[in-house]
Image 1: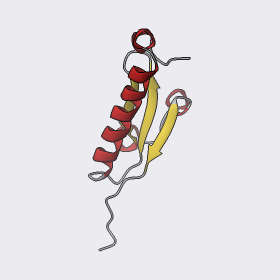
Image 2: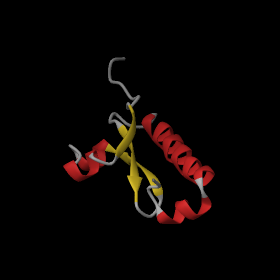
Image 3: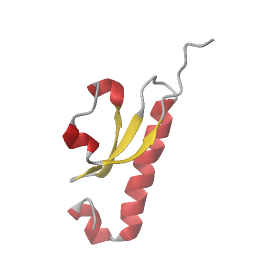
Image 4: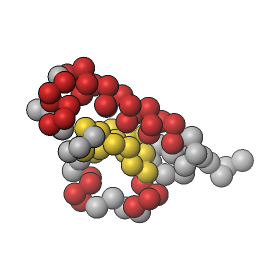
Amino acid sequence: MYASLNIAAAGPAADQAAFVAALDQAHARSFHSYYTQYVLTDDEAGYIAVDEGDYGALPKAMLDRVIDTVPGRLSEEF
């Protein structure tokens, strides 16, 4: 089952490309954030990256769509 009808027409390679793009974005954002980055399914884009700091605690509707997480990499321990 594909997360997006737009991606379904292009097949599994496009689905994987959308996931890798969202995961790359989450990793890139994690270097500049204290918060966890989430990769979620999306009806239009296939997958999106979301910063927990933008939403506080993620609403239940968003938590149900989480595919992967990337911890924030900023630290105040130095």
